[in-house]
Length: 276
Length: 267
Image (cartoon, rainbow over all chains, first blue to last red; front, side):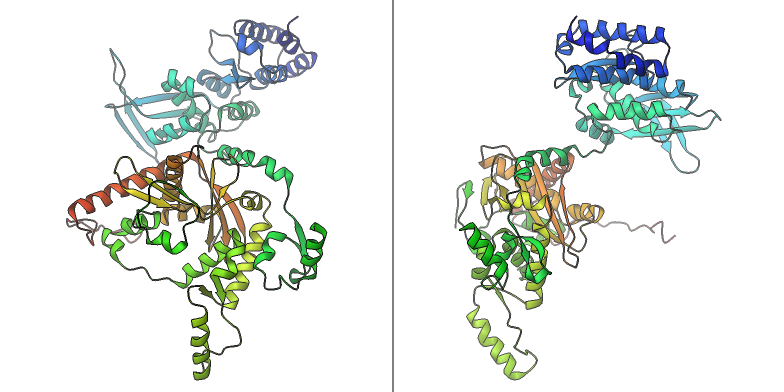
């Protein structure tokens, strides 16, 4: 038995699955997972723990790995197996978990008639065109949800917001291959925030954010910079002394160089003697 | 003085400012209105305070040789005191003068920086006062910058220390636009990458409040912000090029008449 098969058929995964779905669904999803991993050598080499997490997330979100339905897929990213929930998956989760009656996202291309107003009486008018050949550039994307009492909610992402989402995403290749679908997915993710929340929807968004990057704002850059200094921070080679001027509060010795009591400070003297 | 593109570790503060190359503060003045760059800059009290604080945080060993603190026992209100103060000022020639109160604030602010868990890590080991001179490829203009700190090692980061009335993230975000800190990041990163082998792609601000309890926050700009800063830098370089070509720095931004509309909040 291959390592990935051991991971997928893990007992705990089965237990987690059966908490939320029935056994035939578990068998079906596990078969789809094995099928997907067998077809992809890079997935086979992924960390088995991440394979387990991805498979459990299928159960938690309620999406299916059935390739025909195109709701979710297992994808390798930097040695990790990730559950990628697609646009159709996000729609399915919101509708199936009874958050909304229907949900849809539509891209707006250059030259199409498009108008919207927000406020107390929101308006959205879009007259799409038909294209024989290559579509023009995408200028906006919007997602509309119809709630159970008939009220509609929508979000509009302009070109700048789409570009921001694209830039902050780790899935550059997918964006390059399917820019329209990815823009639609981003709009639905953003709309999710305005909808009645269900546990499955929250799980889906957090699963996506974990490996795909948050929609429009994240702390990735800050974390990356902190990581670069992690070794220095761990070393913590900064000598601290108790400052008589600060009621013996601990201060970095470096700061004593500008202090007017530098020459007479007993604590500094003691520290220097110790260092010598 | 003319310098070739490169990294210069030992240029004095005065020599650096005497270089007639484009700097971030120059572009900031140009952005207000081009003629602004021809106005002579006076050294304000805030500038002196900022300079003394920067030296104390980044190069404490130079503090005594470059900064001098006013004696507390001279009463500048009396005639004798004024004479005494003038005599003392002569002894302090060439140094930046700060008051005793300012010095106390500076020491407290410095301690606040070094007591921040992350700020101390990034500024303790590194090089300050490195002058970066490069030629912008598109405009051909010579540019200069002097990053506060370039941390040792291959971190790809520039560190800048800022004093602020508020270190809150929202206030500082506005400052990044208002005072051109975003443009500074874009410009400095571009300059350093033009003359260095190592790739720099991050700009970190250590922001310190000037009042007790001297709040310290550390921020880094997101890539889109840096890109925006870079575009702003190039937009202003184009304006500078235009002014140089026409040999004219206008004291207005728009040559045509413009309409003022009644704002919504007043209607």
